[in-house]
Structure formats: structure tokens, C-alpha cells
Image 1: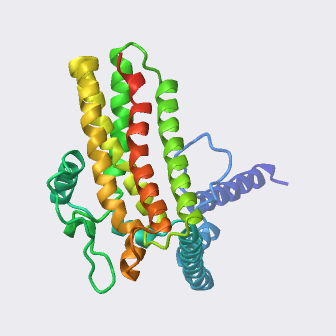
Image 2: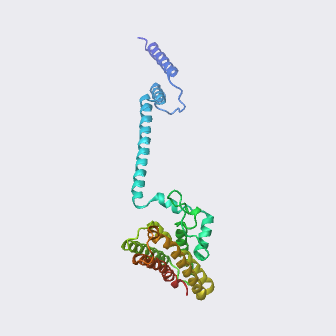
Image 3: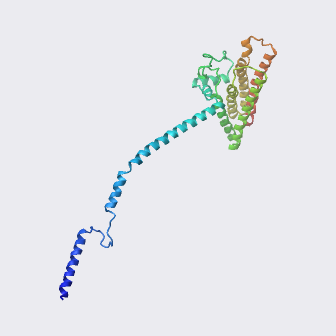
Length: 302
């Protein structure tokens, strides 16, 4: 046997098989790679094609679900807002509060002048339009809540200024000052409501009206404290006297039309015992304003 020819033929066949493998093998950039990279094969292309195409059912389901969630959230928010407005309206008449804040700059300037100098004003009756009082910006005699609210806040700030000039300022004492003023205001309004109830006074005065009239005294309190800071105790007592007389005249002329309106409408004589009690009540409410003005300001001036 010729072993030489057989081995030569074997080597020739082996070389041919290697040549075929080289022709079919991919071009590998790394010569040291042991295995062929099959990740770019048809399977990966099919996966990419499927991901790029996507599932039509997924797109069809996502839009209705998101739309339903948005619609449900919107309806839930509207329902919650309606419930809050309904429950809030039981305790705080929002529509009525808008009336008391319907003011403008001209009204505020005239009303501040009336509170400080009410002696020359003649007509104190509130104007009506179709059985409804006109907005405060159209009538200087109409009560409002803008001036009392701003005056209360300004009074607290002025009190803080007074404490600061005397080296007594602290957040705690300022908070106590605000709480004390608010508590006395609530007590005053409750006392007026109880008095009107006990005397069976049928009047169009509301609780908000009483809060407004009681809050007007803060304007005079601000003037008193500022005068005391600038001119000392003498300036404070002079302005206290002026503002007390002014608020007393203002309250008498304003409330007597409200509290005595029933007797005037019925033609009852003012000399009656019931009307005398109502007049005393009016004077008591007016006289309480200077007392509160002094009580809430005298400790601010030293």
C-alpha cells in the first residue's frame, strides 16, 4: 500500500474543507475570537422587526384606558369641588362676602375720611336697588369688610413696630396681640347678637354687618398708635380722644337707622319703653368702641 499517496489525499481533502469553511465563515474582526457571533443572525432581525412593528392591540387598548382615566379623574375633581362648595356655603356665605368686598379706591378714601371725621356727613341711609342694597363702591354708607380686614392686619403690624421700638418684639408677643384682638372682636359681636335677640329687635343687620361695624374701630386704633410713636403719650391721648368721639358718632348715626327701623316703619312712638331699650342698646354698642380702642392700644405706648 502507498501510504504516501493516501496521506497526501487526506491533506488535500482537509485543505478543501478548510477552504469551504473560510468561504462560509463571517468576517471576524477579532482574530482571537473562539466562537462565531450569531447575535446578528436572522433571529435577532426577527426580534427587531417584531419590536418595530409592535402589537396593534396594545395601541388600541392604551388610548381608551388613558381617556377613561382622564375623564374619571376630571369628573371626580368636579364632584369634589361641588361638595366642598356646598358644605362651605352652609357656614360661609361666599356670595354675600363678595358684596362686602366690592370696593374701589374712591370708596376706601371716602370711608376712611368718614370714620375719622363723621360730623359733616348728612345722609346716613343705605341706598337700595330693587330691594337689594347697592355695592359699597356705589354707596359710602354701605358696610364693607375690606377696610376692617386691612385695618386689623395693619394694626397688628403697627403693634409689632411699637414693640420693636421698645425692644419688646418677639413672634410670641405679636401672636398674642393678634389673638387677643380677634378674641375680643368675637366676644363683642356675640354680645351684640345676644342683645338683639333678647330685645327681639327685627332688623336687617346681619352677623357680617356687625363684624364690619366692629372692625371700623381699628382705623382709629392705627392712628392713635402712630401718633403715640411719633409724638409720645400726649399725641396718643389726643388722637385717642378724637378717634373715640368720631367712632361714637359714626356708630350712633349708622346703627340707629338699623335698630330703630322697625319702629319707624310701624309708626311707633320713640318714647315707648321698647324703643328706649333699643336706643340704649345703640348707645351701648357705640360706647363700647372707645373702650376696646383704649384697651387694645394703651400698652403699646410707653
